[in-house]
Amino acid sequence: MPPPPAEPPRIPGAETAENTSPTVAERFRALPRPALIGGAVALVLGGSFLVASLAIDSTIASGTTVLGVDIGGLSPEEARDRLDSELAGQTDEPIQVYIGEVPEDAADPHLIDPADAGLAVDVAATVDQADRPGLLGRIFGGGGGELEPVATVDEEKGRAELEALAEQTGTEHTEGAVSFADGEVVVTEPSSGASLDVDGALERLRESYLSGATDTPLSLPVTAAQPDVDEEEVRRAVEEFAEPAMSGPVTLTADGQDITLTPAMISPYLTMEPDDDGSLEPQLDGEGLAGDDTVRAEVDGVSRAALNARLAVQGGEVVVTADGRSGLEVDTGDLGEKVMPLLTRIGPARTDEATVTETEPELTRENVSELGITEQMSTFTVNFDPAPYRTTNIGRAAELINGSVVKPGERWSFNETVGERTEENGFVEGLIILDDQYQTAQGGGVSAVATTMFNAVFFAGVKPVEYGAHSFYIERYPEGREATVAWGHLDNSFENDSDHTIYISATSNENSVTISFLGTKKYDEVESVTGDRTNVVEPGTREAIEDDCVPQPPLEGFDVTVERVFKIGGEEVKREDFKTRYTPRDEVVCEAGSGDD
Image (cartoon, rainbow, N blue to C red; front, side):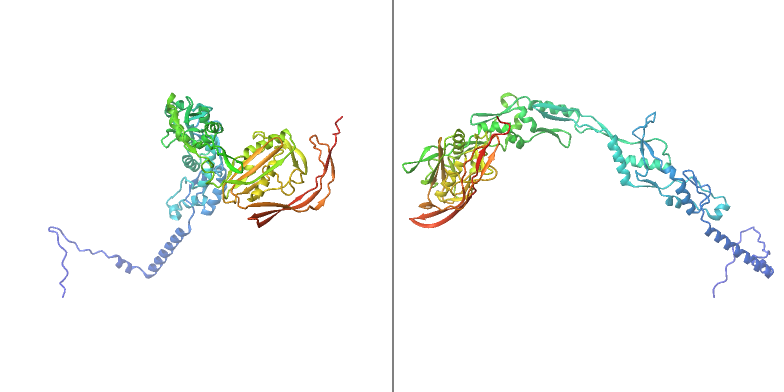
């Protein structure tokens, strides 16, 4: 059995009195039954009413305001409607701003539209944070106060608006710089600048907008911009490099000759660029310098092309009439590297050796036989009526062609070798055929050289690549075996398929031009067989009154085929056709113009 409960301890000297008052339970049992039932019902109903009141009443605490607009006692929906209506005028007002400190007179501020800056009040979020004290709060005096509105910021719009303002109002800083023009040093002094601090300004705008103080000018923060290249660095660059660089010419020597480069030549390609530490470092565009026309002229004055040995046929044998000569080529690939160290030197020290390469001629006395130039492959002469323009133009073309060396498999071009027929290239005006009639133009007469070249190619047995006959037939040329050229339109070219090097000899006098091919014959003999004229068309007559009209005799048009026959050991081994269509050469009668007497 469990032990009996212990008696409570007694404090010595203290009296213990027995409690004879009725307990709460005894009193409750002593109440009449109807009273008990009524009290219970009242308690239940009162509690239910209180809970319902607390649950239903969600109105905003009285005295709640947002930017001065009272929303106390309103439901959330009513509060949102009131704020939408009454805040519009306040929150749409332009914000007055100044870049930097607000001036004392506060005149002419910049105005920023809140909407353009991406600023707006979030009415729903603002109402959501308002106090709702309920019934008990009202009973015991619960109230609201000034409620800070919730603002939204569209960062992208706000930044774009402020960046535009920064561009409009900022002052750019100026970097110190040293440049060169016309052989002189040009100095740009550095200066500081200031620009709007976009991030700081965006935050300040948001704060001002939330405070509702849009009618008070707002100071937006600025960021000072200091140049990386300062005055001290500019001064150092000028003294240590720029002034010495432009103090005089520099000289490169090649084979005892001088290439002189003046400051005016160098300055367009010389710069001083800042590095990461703001130090100005010199840079020279060597490629640009080497390509400059004036520099190129200096280099060309020292360089010389290799000259091939000159050959001729004497007594049926190929002989060397003049020895070849080596050439000298100035290498401009390292021109910048050569010139840059000289720019800070003084006097005679501003000189160095140019990089040069000695070039050997393709054809020398020693290698003529090795190249297979052992005999005359072909020769052809065209005669013409003497005329000063013909003598000049034909002689110049022959001069440029003479001595050409064409290796096996290479293509030779009349236009590339002779060049454009211009006054600068040594040609004068003469008669040409254009639009089926004679006219005057630069280089007239060179078709005699083109025809001579075509026939030298024809009888050497090598391969024509591009050629074209005159539009109508010219009596001094062999029909079907003649050619013309036009710069940029028609070339006269051949490929050396003879398996040996070909040397071209070209000579002329006042009434003839001769071109010979020297090499090794691939065929013992090449013959020409000219067919009959077919599809003959009679010419017409035209009158012209142009000042440069050239009279023209009539000649029929026709078709003709020329066969090239290749023989080895007297036997035919191949045959080729060359077909030509000539238009009629109309008679041209030059009439006096209406204004002539």
